[in-house]
Length: 217
Image (cartoon, rainbow, N blue to C red; front, side):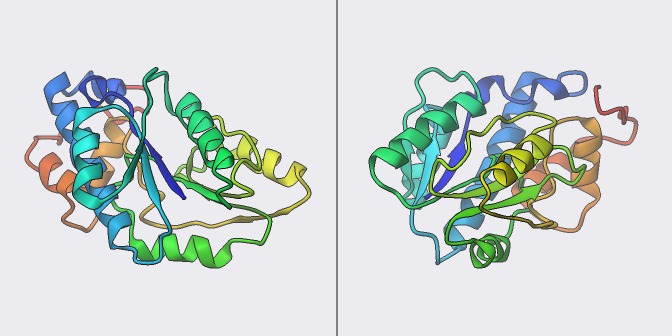
């Protein structure tokens, strides 16, 4: 089961607030989620996709692409949402989970296939963010093999937890999955990279030439 947590997009991407108003940030988050949903739907080998959300735009995309919805009424963040969705999967005796975020608009179907081809009978596969700090995809078999804690520096803790299980753990560097958008530097990087995703087309409409590049701006 692929799990994609989606917070309330009307309050999305607060770390871009120094350069974009909330309406633009919401529009960007919606475009990125649409790119992710389209890529996942194009991968014919998936065996189930669920958006973990109560966001209206996300619910519409779930209906469009035939995804399940696991309702996230608390909207407390990705960590809590995935913990809840993982429990749902375990109660259903689902064999494995693949968690991906909603803000990796360059994701490609072949990357998802690569993760599944690397997936062990028991264990994990982790695809880090481009900066090596975050986790942009993580496969677990069994579905709740390790608890997940998302954030700017989640990759090393996830890797350590996966290795501590004593089961197989593979790290894959995947170019599309590696690209997320949290800060102004990420947004400029997205614009500069090849591609014509919804998020890229949207961001290229904005004048980003003088944006600050510090990661915390």
